[in-house]
Image 1 (cartoon, rainbow, N blue to C red):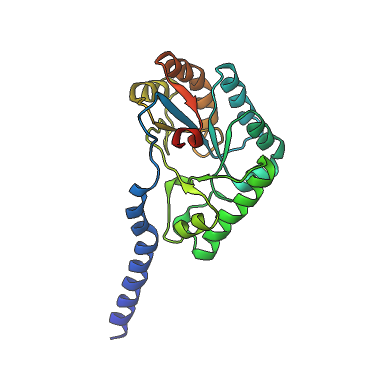
Image 2: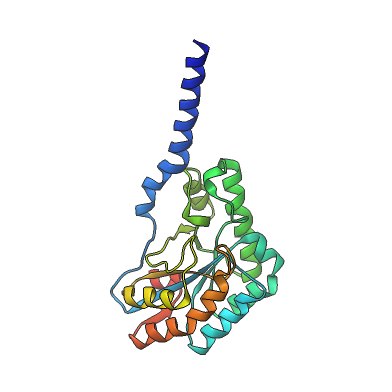
Length: 230
């Protein structure tokens, strides 16, 4: 009898976690995955930064192409590299939120989720001089508490329509082909200027100049998520 009760309890706990973490993904199709296709625009987005070494180098590449982008920054990393955040904003790029700690929200309860959103929002607003409007969850993982937290802080959940490298390393040449071949008006491209996947920023820097050349050569304007959606 006791074993049966324990088994039911375990199933109930597992079911609650599935509803809280996995079940929340049923809501993500209503979030932003791409912009309108009415203009030949693409938003480049950079996750996991700021990185003291690699993010400034990415900014230099973007400046040479007169391209603007959105940087989804991790709050605690931004707090350690304030000048880099100010440089991003000063160059006309969008500062957006990638949560405070880059921990998976699947394993964060409602209070911890609120802190992840609120702390990053506060720090990024102070450093960039304006409140972040957009949020991307670390690893693309959401939970049921996230949606309310974002509403309270005036942020919108943004995913992506093109991702040349995820959890596994992808060579720079393949990343370029992946993005250029799949480019469409309104696309949101997910890139990484700091290390989540090992050596991701090195591969990005190798790929980025050719990627920008390919997109601008195809007639695309490279802009921020905010401008793409506006």
